[in-house]
Length: 324
Image (cartoon, rainbow, N blue to C red):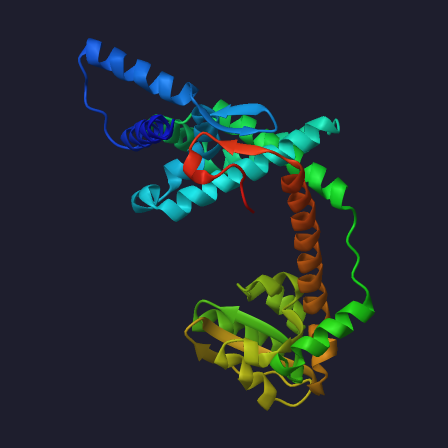
């Protein structure tokens, strides 16, 4: 059985790799024989999960998009293929659990995702991808449908994750040595692509037009829409030119300053020295802790599924059961 499976995988790999390059024209008889061999290979069992037999074709459909987009050298990478295999088994375990509990898909969310993908790629690009990589987009849609169903099922199964101030404080104490107090500056900022525009902006402010109005008209930075207001920022995390703002008095506007990013004008509003690292990083720490708790809950649930499941690979070298 092991040899048969290895042969099947080799045929499958050849099929995928050949589909990613130019296909040489075959004689009708040879082409028909090749097609029959491919069909036979894809119909063979890849893995059995709780009695459900999944074929090489099921596995191919699951990884087809990832495989086609993959760097050629990674297609023969054993570690990459092992990861894809385990991802497939995890996915099917969760899909079984979702279907068993009657989980329903949010069709509106699915259609939004599909439309976003199609709009981002464009119809012509998708058509070229399907032709070049021999992709069946309808099967990719089916896999995406399964992914959405599994994700929504997991969200409901693991419940809402809460992070308390007490947990954040404890997490902060563990991370405190990595974090230091910071100096925050509240500044307004304008940046233009050329010096002439920056000087025009400065002239307008000297005539009494507000920094906010001038920023909305001249600044090419994202904060320009908010009148150039960056709020309180840690200057040390910004390009060096921003340190010039700390040389200003509160309420003072700088001249035109040149950097590799363009021509800048700053206005200093306020400075807070040595802000507690806990206060500054609290929101970030909360987000990190939330992600950790979410990942742990999902891992615990999936571990439970593995413990209750019987997973048998057609390739005996993989063992009788999968590991996380």
